[in-house]
Length: 260
Image (cartoon, rainbow, N blue to C red; front, side):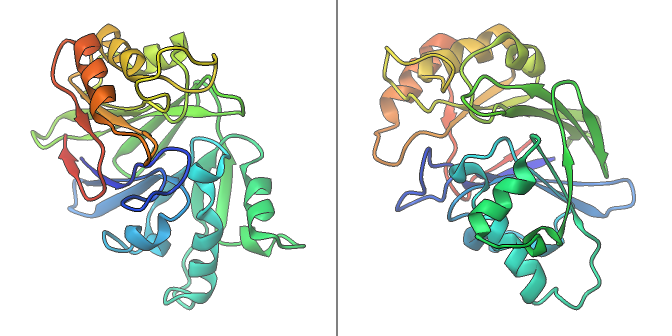
């Protein structure tokens, strides 16, 4: 299983990075490569095309309906309907996210009908739901954010031919549900939207210290910090996260690939 960072900027796309978008790939027993996109935030659809054909991925999982996590779903709809794959007879693309995400696509697209939803097979998911996508098993937990939001646990084949586990927090304050989901995972992709700010409103984001303590308490193998705003120096956030985690941490940057 491979995690490739397409976009990691928090809140908006930045000059060096799109907003939230991550590509997860793995081969099944027959050698077929399966691809899942986690989030498709503002500015991500272009750089995603450097890594795959977005119209032909096997599923898209969106953590919640804020634009920096879902805005380019409308662009993917256009790409599927009018791009090179339009005559390929592709089945509707499985799309997993909180209830109401389909209406969010329509709001972003500005359409008066549901044409923009035709490329998708939207399946709302919530806490404790689990779905299978090729060699992947996806399990969801409620995140703590101002709008309905999920964290996701992705289990799939590892480089050593056993099981590897990636957990993506999406946007969340620290909470018991995400802690339980992250327990003993190999890689925790954790947001730190509050960066190195030490006094923050509850129920929105984590800072570096909270991301680090979450990783420590969950016993994860590796912590990758993401969702730091483009106008914020990430170094203090990484330092706080490493101190809390008790081990080195790394930053999600576009183009980076982590092999599990």
